[in-house]
Image (cartoon, rainbow, N blue to C red; front, side):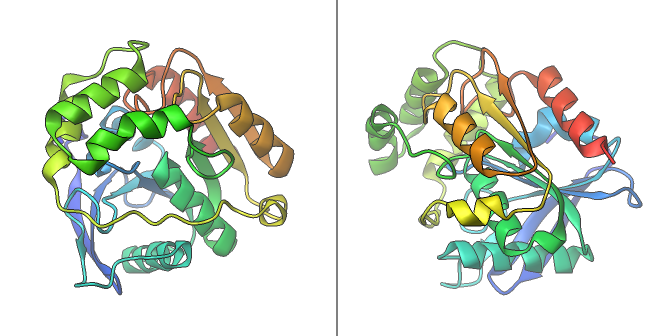
Length: 270
């Protein structure tokens, strides 16, 4: 968090699913932007490489996922179990922040949550950006699941490191602070992430919200071409681009200049 802007505030937002930890920065009167991290070891801290730049044009609210690593605390056994629950959770967070409509974006699993929320509550989403979203437009590769299995069965820092070294493939150096954050999450108690069907094609075709899709060219998680082709065929208002020389898990800490340029141009559009 030392790499975040000095005006960062730590907020706690009560919801029916538990208290949500939010890192906020940027002008209070700027348009709101909700950021969702990926799954696994990701937390709101993962946005450190973009927080300062995004906070120049937005009031940034970066969330720790309920039930995942971080400081959000589920209310007993009342954690989200379905994608509808996740959408209700995000609506409750927006209500707690006093936000009616926001720009929303996420990475990986967080991007999937953001998309499902936009499909269920499009009136609350001004613009939506998706960073290499999982389980939205393509399934996981078998090799990815095979390499992830040891880490999932018996989480340990060395297994997390080995898995990330395989997935990133040396395409970009891993930030040591980011890597330590992923390793630290290995022993963190967490609930099973929500897994559900991919969004229905008809629902995607009906989404009347501007969408920015950024695909990691070297992703070993899924087929980047399949993600790009399916999304551009179904989403009516999508802008799509491929980020070269970056893998799935290296986002959003890798390629910060290109990523910030895409995001600020998209969010600043009328």
